[in-house]
Image (cartoon, rainbow, N blue to C red):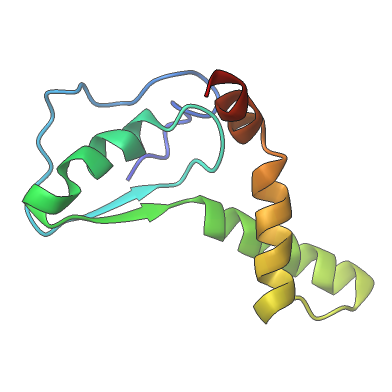
Length: 102
């Protein structure tokens, strides 16, 4: 689990690229924006090590929408939740930078 802030608050990963994840592990990148090197490192080993890699994005969206739902007394679930996630993803700094590079 990466909850160090590296990748979000500062570039990088708490691990080097030489790190080998244990087989059949759960690898969780809690960061939801920024430089997600830790997730990229896990994704590179996903198939060979049979890793389950979790992205922090869905957890961020879940928490964010729960607060909005509570404040405005609006249910946010299903297709509305998916649509808000896509809108937020498209406007994230990481996605904007990615689009400029490619």
